[in-house]
View (tube, one colour):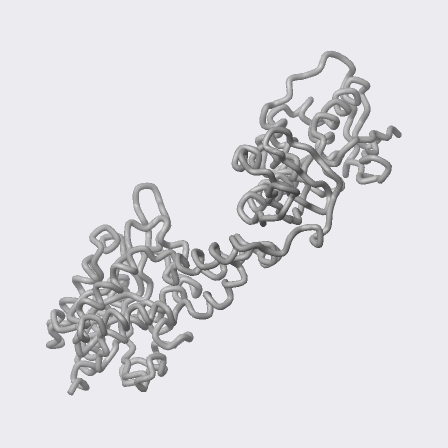
Length: 466
C-alpha cells in the first residue's frame, strides 16, 4: 500500500505528478491511499480491482480528462483523488472512456466537476466587498463560504476584475489579499473578521430596489440560483423578501396608476399590460417560444374566452386562436350567434410549449407550475376587461381561472362562480371543451355530435349576458 501526501487540497499539479509516478511504477488504484497534509482525506479504493498498466512509455491523456481533473480536484469529495486515478488507469485500456457519459465513474466525476463550476460561479456572482479602513488608505473586504476548494482557482478573476482596488477575500480555508500589484495568501478567517457594512451599501440597496422588476420575478429560479446561504453576505438580499411579497402588488399598482393617469382609459392600460407581458420570463417557456401571445379584443367585452396556450401558428403570428382550432372556434361562435369581435380571447399560458420532432413543433401540455406562473396575467386581464361571463375552454383554462383542478365532464354546461381574486365577487364562469379536442376526434359522427354540444355551451353562456 502506498500513501501519497498532497500539500494542498486543490493542488492539481501535485496530484498529476503523483499520478504519473504511480502509473510509471504500475501501481494499481486499490493500492494507493491519498491524503492532504497530515489529515487523511481519501481512504477509498476503486470499487473493483483495476489491472495495473504494463510498464512502459506513458500514454497520451485526452485533453478532456485533464480539463475534468482540474475541476474535480477542487471538489471537497474525499474520494476525488482515487477516482481520478482509477479513471486514468482505465483510460490506458479504454481510450474513449472519457466520452462515455453513461459510465458510472465518468458520470460521478462529471457531477463533481459540475458542482465545482457552479460554486465558482456563485463566488463570482454573490461575493460582496465592503469598505474598511486600512491605515491611511481604504481596503475592501469580502467574506465568502465556498462549498469546494475554489478560492485559489478564482483568484485571477478577482485580480482582473478589481485590479485597481486593494482588497481581501476571507474564507474559512484561506484568505486572499491584493495590494494592487501582488496577490498573497493568508490563513482562513471567520465572518467576524469581515466588516458588517458601509455607506455604499445604502446606495446599492436603493439602486437594487429601484431596478427590481416584479414582472420578471421567478421565486423558484431565484432561490435555485441564489440560495439563501449567500443572502447574509449580500446587502441587497435584505430587501428580497419584502420585494417578493410586494411584487404582484407593485405590478397591480402599475396598471392601476396607468388607468388613473389616463382618466380610466382601459385601452391604454391594457396596452401597458400587454407591453409588459412581452418581456415575461416567469417560467422557462419564454426561451424556445417565438414571442408572448397576449389576449386580444375589446377591453369592455361582455364575454372573455380563456384557452390553453398558443399553438404553432399562434406563436408565429403573435395572436391567439388563428390556427386550425381557432378556425373551428370561429365557426362554432358563428353557429351559436356569438360575435367574436365583441369578445375578448386569451390563453391561460402565454407562450407556446412544444416538443421538437424533426422540423415540426408538437404541442405539449403546460404543467401546473407554468399555469400558475401565467395566472397573474389572466387575473390582470380580467381586472381590466371585467367581463360579465368568462368561458374556460378546456381543463388548463379552468385550472387557471379557479386555481385548482376542475373536471370538465362534471362542471360543463352550467354557470359557476369564480374565486373572488379581484374583490368583485369573482364573476360568472362557464366551462366547456377546447376546440382542439374536437379536431382530435377520429369518428366523424362523434365529432359532429361534440361540435353541436360545444355550440350549445357557447350559446348558453352568451344567453346569460344581460
